[in-house]
Structures are given as C-alpha cells and as structure tokens.
Amino acid sequence: MADLLVLGIETTCDETAAAVVARSPSGAGDIRSNVVRSQIEEHAPYGGVVPEIAARAHVEILDHVIAQAMADAGIGFSDLSAVATAAGPGLIGGVIVGLTTAKAIALAAHRPLVAVNHLEAHALTARLTDGVAFPYLLLLVSGGHTQLLAVEDVGRYRRLGTTLDDAIGEAFDKVAKMLSLPYPGGPEVEKQALQGDPERFAFPRPMLNRREPDFSLSGLKTAVRLEADRLAPLSDQDVADLCASFQAAVVDVIIDRVRAGGRVFREKLGTAPTALVVAGGVAANGAIRTALQKLSIDAGTRLAVPPPQLCTDNGAMIAWAGAERLSRGLTDPLHLSPKARWPL
Ligand code: KG4
Ligand code: ZN
Image (cartoon, rainbow, N blue to C red; front, side):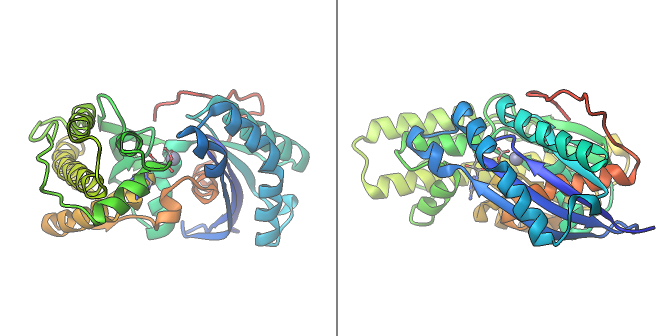
C-alpha cells in the first residue's frame, strides 16, 4: 500500500493555513509543507478576533496559501489522496471559506473530502510528531477550549473533564487585556511573568482537589482584576508580578486537574494512558510545559507536547487528522454542512 498524501486546510479562527502531510501504511507521518498566515495584525487594533474581518481575510488569501503549500510539497492536486478541512468548531464565516474551498478542490480533482473536527486535529497531532499510541490522556488547552480527554482511537474521544466557564487561553487573553498588554495575550503574559514575582499575590486555585477533572478560571481572572484595580495606576513591576502570580496559579490548577484526569482515566478505561499529551495554543507556554514535564516524571508517564508551531492552529494537524481518518475509510459527502459548534 502506498503512502496517503493529504492536503489540510485550517480557517476556523484567525490563522489561514494549509499543509500537505503524508501517512505511511505503518502510521508514520511526514510533513511535506506547512504554510500558516496569521491575521494577528488585522485583529490587533480591536484587541481580539473580529469574525467578519477574519472571514474576509480567509477569502483573500486562502487560495495563495494553498498554492504555496502545494508548491512547497512539489505536487499537484491529482497527486493527493484526499482533501481535508476543519469543518468546525469555530467562527462560522471562516469555516465556510475553508470548507467551500476544500469541496471545490475535491470535486475538481476527483478526490474524497475529509471533514475534520478542529479539536480532533489538536488531539491527534502528537501521533504525527511523537508517534503516540492509543489510548492516551489529552490535555487540550486553547483559546476556546479546555478539556481533558481519553483518546481511545481515531474518532473515539471520551471527555473526562472540561471548564465550567472560561478556557485557559481565554483567561490569559483577558488578563492581558485588563493589564493593557497587546493581543494575543497568552505569549505577552508569559513574557511579563518572566520578570515578575509569582508569590507576590496569593491568587485562588479554583477546583483544587476536586475529584472530577473539571476546570474553572473565572474566579481567578476576577481576583486578578480586583488586585489590578486596587493597585491602579500599575507600575511595570506590578504588571509583571500580576502576570507571574496569575500564571503560577494556572500552573497549579493544571497540574492538580491533570492528576485528577489521570485517576479518572484509569477508572473509566481500566488501563493507564500510554502518554500524557498536551495540545492547543496554551501548550506553547514554557512554565506550563516545565510543570507538566515534572508531573509526568513523578507519575512515570511519558509526556508528549508537539513543538509550539504545531500546538497553535496550523494546516498540518488538519492534514494529519484527515490522513488518520482516511486510513480508516472515513470520508465525507460534498453536501456536508459547516459546524460552528461541534463537540468531540
Ligand atoms: O489553539 P490556538 O492557537 O487557537 C484556538 O483554537 O483557540 O490557541 C490560542 C490560545 C490563545 O488564547 C493564546 O493566548 C494562547 O493560546 N497562547 C498562550 C501562549 N501562546 C498562545 N497562552 C499562554 N502562554 C503562551 N505562551
Ligand atoms: Zn486550535
């Protein structure tokens, strides 16, 4: 059997991305190209992603991004095994742009369409980068989602816990905004935290020691806001200390919740996970990565964290998830509808 060669398209948020990934019959992945155009500059003046601006930007550049990905891979559409696209969840305008384009290519090139769930793509990336075997424990931490999942197979995801309010990336972004740091906030908060004192403020660690591996971030976020209001006007050191203390609280919460997730995983699946996998934009955070590294060593579990550029949104993860689905005969009809909401 030959390798599967899949084009992946990602347009669910503020990244316009396309990539070509190969999957061998043994399940090994190879990224042949990976083109990501960020819309950060378009959205920065508004302090967050503006859906209408995002959709229009996707329309303007998606064709070029796909052409670049195909050229970098040195192939034509007829060489593809399938066209994969993130059919949701996400901002619906962007999802429509990606799905419509993928359908057009699939139709013109007589290739199957594979509709990928954006979260599923984050969930499966560690199999591309680290060859992780099923079943594994996944911590999915992005701007829109914070979940602990048991990944049992392609298409079989069991949600063990989720956030009851804000996503962790969202909390980073909101804290950045209240401290007047530029968008996107996560990396800025991390940068500030490096100069700050993580013990100056004793912020709450919501949900600590709860049995169910759920998260809650809004109380922590509010505590940061109250402290910032109390201190105003803020000095540079205040901002750095607030960021460091906030990030330290997030790290403690994540470690405790992942421990709870590991326990529930073993109870529900009757086996230990092959690895702890971390995915989503927040996995780019160095302090969180370091703490999870320590946790996995203590627990005797392998930690797999894709490199930062594959943790944030990209086309390679969509192409890979498409190849994984295709290898199991999973394709989709051309009349498939885009989905703004699409739980795993
Ligand atoms: O997965 P992603 O690229 O897009 C979504 O699907 O949401 O994640 C973006 C989120 C944003 O909230 C961003 O602030 C956060 O990931 N993020 C970070 C870091 N880099 C990105 N959060 C904390 N520390 C970082 N270094
Ligand atoms: Zn994402």
